[in-house]
Length: 225
Ligand SMILES: [Zn+2]
Image 1 (cartoon, rainbow, N blue to C red):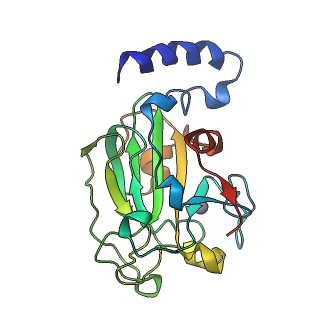
Image 2: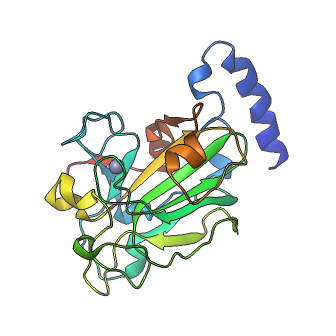
């Protein structure tokens, strides 16, 4: 936390009286505190099913974040790197399944304080195994570890092995096999665990927050894959 964050926090408290929906997150994360979660020059928000609030194919729930994807045009591994958007603590780092309800694959959630978490799903951390044999893989960061803004925490494609993103990313669309799902979560800070995301992070009072405005401010474009 820095002085700037506390200053914004005071503002968001007053805003909360009018519009509680986005009171803590992301207003608690100002642009000065935030770095892009991927290489903006080589990735974009996937239009259509990848947008926040889109209908989920094969499920009843709306899409709860933004899918950041690529056209897989380079063999540079860093084109597929995922970075911490702000300083924080690793609150969750676990393989989270294949189905539409829990199909996040390899997922990391960071606690940034100020009741704001960020989530990065469908990650691959070398060595990586494609979804047909999907199972837990090593993570680049561990539960409870502190991370800095912009710290490299994973990859969403293992380009060296020509393998795709984990979890149900590979089921929504052919091109969606290369993406990370980025989501902001507003929930009381200090939560962590290695059980379910719902139980350990959301609880009964947490909710997803649309990250689109933040991503657009950071320079992302929304494009067809
Ligand atoms: Zn997604």
